[in-house]
Amino acid sequence: MIRDITIGQYYPADSPLHKLDPRVKLFATVIYVIALFCFKGIVGLALITGFLYAVIKISKVPFKFMTKGLKAIVVLVIITSVFNLFATPGDIVFWKWGSLQITDTGIINAVLMTIRLVYLILGTSLMTLTTTPNQLTNGLETALAPLNKFNVPVHSIAMMMSIALRFIPILIEETDKIMKAQMARGADFENGNMIQKAKAMVPLLVPLFVSAFRRAEDLAMAMEARCYNGGEGRTKMKPLKYESRDHKAYAIVIGFLVLVIIAANVVPFPQ
Image (cartoon, rainbow, N blue to C red):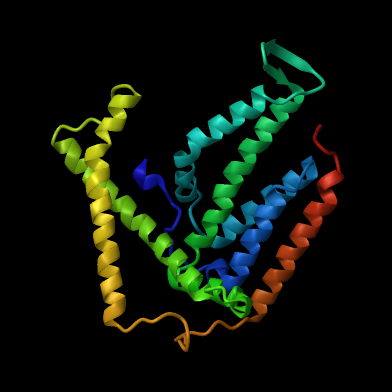
């Protein structure tokens, strides 16, 4: 389960999506999330499904590798679906017990929320899978550069997000090592009730936090040793420049959003 988390990982490949400017991928991710929660009909769902399928094929990232990240949100998907299924009123009631009920609208909302969460993880994972942490930092900093006029520390925000994303796979690997070491010493992380499982996590969390703080301290010392003092006056080894493929990608993403909005009222789901 620990190694199934794909957020923050980079999958190297020679694909058109990997070659896009990181600002385009950030913009496309935001538009995709907006479209994902705006569609209301069969046509909109078909558009989003087709768009996601095409992007995954273009990225050349194996679909099995991407679906590994879904295992980490199974519990969240189940809880969200159950709440939508039993707590949504509707015109047709199939089952009712006290305040709980299953209606036609509840079934539709549960299915839609499950689809949205699955598509959300798959779509947003593509950004980190096809973009290196350095590219993501440069793209985010450049995209938010206008906020510098309002004294927003854009460089610091971009640096913190980049470090956080870079630390996710490192901490996952560290957690896996500590867990295997503790299991070799007789620790049991799977059996028992909730309280016993919580107590069993203590031998895992304590060394993990110690290791995380040690890595953070080492990183801070390394940055100070290299005279790092923020983004003011800094230059980039590889400045970001738009190419023709980036402009085409912008047009495709904007066109996709327009089509989803137009299709929002075509064959709508019951509300």
